[in-house]
Image 1: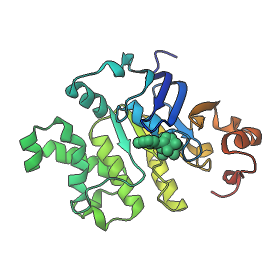
Image 2: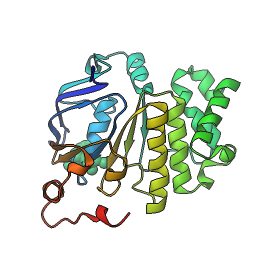
Image 3: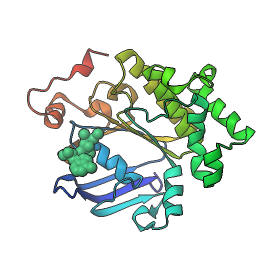
Image 4: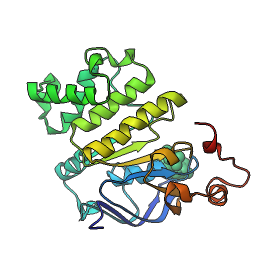
Length: 259
Ligand code: ADP
Ligand code: MG
């Protein structure tokens, strides 16, 4: 293995409230991995992802992305280009409801626009074509001109994936992307994330609240518990004993029979 795409060193995040959401987290992510981060609600999963693209400032520790210390980036321009390389997908999709699907996908290009271009919504034909291609990639090319708020949850999340792809990321960060969806739709969305990982070679880090999808999609799993990284390994290495340790005594592993 060469230099990791991402290297997290002794990461600590204490919020102003005094809560320490990450306690000395150390983790490497290799190019091409489909890494799933599991853990109970409040274990620090979102905080970790938000530190990776500097939506949150770590209290201490280091994050190297492509070998570069992202904590040293000061200029807004440098932070913008870092974020451009990291597409982000959220539980609640974060679309602009009254805009067309295509416009939403083109938002992935916004960081490259001047203020007046973005205000006027000026995009080139090539950019529109690329946005459309990304919609086709997630199977909703026919929805381009529909308003975003007319779509189902699963379709909205596919728009969010297409939007993230339109910024040509190296890394895709997804924070509980299927938590608002029903089980059947979960698989559709997870299948597209896997396709992007395998066919486009984009490294994927997904936070999942429950274990149920992990065995089917993850190439590697890490688990957070109260801000500490307590497990790292292959999905099949999460034994019943590990499961109890991560989720607490008496928790039940539904993943073996529910999906
Ligand atoms: P998860 O995504 O695993 O549910 P979070 O990273 O959201 O975990 O939260 C980890 C801990 O940090 C929790 O105790 C949560 O209450 C706290 N926390 C998260 N975001 C903030 C914030 N913006 N301000 C203060 N505390 C926060
Ligand atoms: Mg969260």
